Length: 623
Image (cartoon, rainbow, N blue to C red; front, side, top):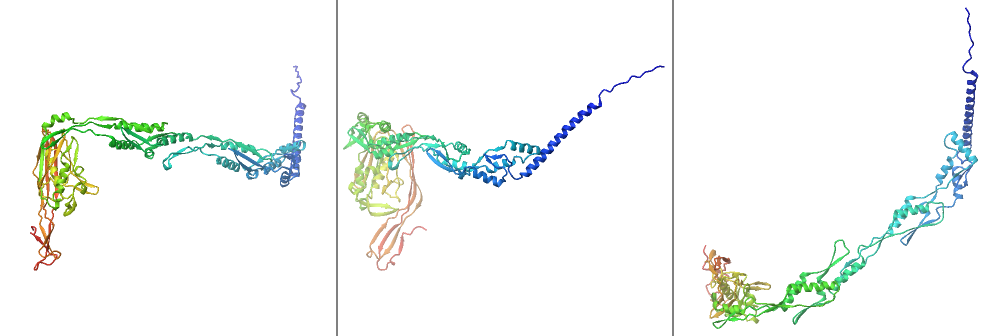
């Protein structure tokens, strides 16, 4: 048997892989050697310059190589100009504020710049240090200068000055010292952009110049809401209203309203939100003046009426009147015064008179005269004595009232017609009831209540609307129970008697004086009304008596009456008045309360009489 074996070559040569590994190992060892050298060099170089600035390092061009921190700082201070010697001038709205750099601690940022200088070649890993040290040795390293200041203080100073230059706008205002409107003028305000001023100040300080610098901040004007011109125009309008008197003229009669009076009517009303005013005139004051002028000028129409010539009824003719139109007059005054506010200078108003026709003409009265008849009458008897001025205080008011015409709807007032109660008007002294007791003399007009009570009862029975009435303090038996009417005047207090003619026609009051009697009659056109008067209801009766007191102040046996006895009671009288168709026109209840008065007589003591001051009831009251 034959066999053969062939020889084979390996795929890679062992010597080639070994060469590559050797190259890589050589490169790595070289790098390691270089790194080790750099680290050793950097460490040695750093230790050599520990705490000092490396060579080649400068700050702002000041070489600091080999200096420690303190020396480096001193060298910088010596070499650099002082940034705190200058000042910043701030100009706002024409005002200036000088802020010294030292006040805001403006300076170089020495600490920060030294920190940067000392970090070069001393920080980071060995490689970083080596690179930095090589660069510093070869090229040098420049640390730029930096400036610093107290920002908070600068903001505070600039803001405070800017705010101080701000001013609010002032509106014009109107006041009225001593009755004339005067203006306090307006002024323009100003506003300052405080933040903008701070930004400009920061930018002015952010440089390396030690020289003075300045910034200018413009203020923004703030216009007032109400200008002087607006207010002055309103004040002038108001003052013009009362600049001159105003004359009211009608016919031949005129009235002058003085400027001071008009001034009191005028006021300025400021509109909501301000800035405008409205001249206002008090209308109530104008009403009063016009009404007062009407009283001077107006001539009322005279209604026809009836009177008596002896026993014959005659007609008093009517007459037209004339008057100022009240509403037109008021409008004219207001329009004229408002016109002055608008620029006119009118100082006179001519007012037209308008005719006023009588309510009852002569012809109508003539046609009715035949129907006039007596509607009622009442008579009161009295004893003429010093207590009524021997009848004078009864006769005088009767004569004054006789012939009085009361027109439809008109009120009759006893005191207004019969007064004033004075000696000049024919009255004399008499007796009166004062504070519930009799004063027997010395009272002017005493006794005239006989007249007022008589007329009250005549009007009551004619069916008219009754008004003011008050009973006497105690009951006087010559008057009907509960239907007396007293008259009393004390200063401003007046107790009168009134009634109103609520018929459609005039009435005539006739006053008749007879010996020891007074009578009133009321004449008119009857309208069919009927009057019913109830009997008086009386209750709470209280008996009176006379009290006798012995005295040594009178001659023996002589008596002097101080007071009369009057029984006390309450009463109620009802009057019902119905029209011709049965309609109730009036239903009145007259309540009266009469006090009890104890009579009082002084008796001069005689021998055997009781001691002075002894009081005897005569007759004694019931138990």
